[in-house]
Length: 546
Image (cartoon, rainbow, N blue to C red):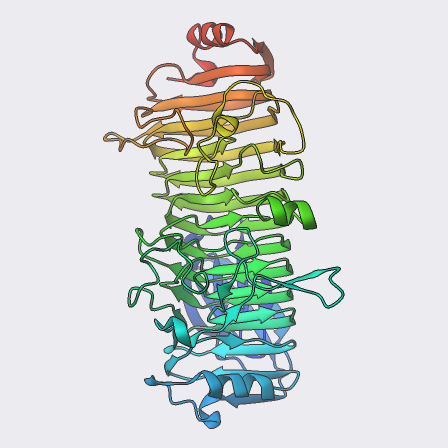
């Protein structure tokens, strides 16, 4: 029996998700609509398009002799469709169509749809409003500008009239700084759908967006979609590519969904993360394909000022059925996470040719609210991920004091208001093939150890021709760390169950400063001293290591 559910629908389309049929890809199956084949697919998350509003449909999946139960669903009500070309949008790639499309957005009533038919629409920045659906049709392209002078600027902070509060609009890498408005910008809007088979083209290879990428020329680089203080927003189906900076940036928002997207940037493009949810409560990422120049997903909550002032973590995150290629990390946390990151569940995903799989980046100075906890990864396949599991509490990038003694010292320092915390990391049912550097590299702070790490049903093997690389961006670690097993340092409780390390250099587990290690249900030793840890690891092949 093929099991599936409808996870999203509008007046014109419906998205299905198969259960228990693989990660991202599955065996080809047919989709029958009212008894007639609508399409075949090999994806676990698929979209039916071309439907009629306010209409009942019968849906069934077939694969040879295997079928699903028939499901009846009804598309949403639609009052009116506003075609942007009727608002004098040219769609020829030459005229600036921003005003025409913005007019259609502002004129659209509740239960209406703004529709972009086939064409190339040159735009600067489009601003959303509440209760809106934008449908970017097949072969429709929103084309970004290379001209900085044509873009609005979102001020970082504006003081309120009574001087008691600040109004934050712009953001750059965790700080409230002036930034250019994004191609699609939402400011405190709710109940919005951005959908379609079309393309958001950032056009960043043209012009200077990717040169001097960390410099502020009037303002910092825009994203492709920026959602500030928004609620109940879904982005579905689109291809987003060649972004000036991060592709998707929900910021201090709630109940955000990214479904069935394709996010593409060259592997060497600077800081072109796929999505960077920052201080977001309630995030669902389903069926998204990433191929990028930086982290595929980077969960954040601001640098010290924003984290300390607002204390708003990114939390309640569900990531599933995603395909992550290239980039620095599959799912990263930080390093701007001074407000904390909590309750993250990633499952049924493929990580391929990323530098790291899970990547936690923190450091002294992020503060006591920078708590990472409740992180669970399960049912994931990795291939040619250089280091599948990285927890780096000494991250040395993107801050003026990143190489200071305070940040890089491996000695225990006093625990105070500047000390971050990492707790409760769980990894289950994960295959890691063709690793290049280390199976895992976990390095906590000696004064605030990673409280709990669980590895269950983990397989790690190594590439024949490994490419040297530092396992984590921290001082005193170099590119000599190839074909390492699991390096674990400064952990309170380590639990390993059915962990197999095949082909590593040296010991399978290189464990230091671990208070308690439970392997396959047995307490191995207290590895709180380096010498004791080395002796323990050298005397055995932990958990079936070969």
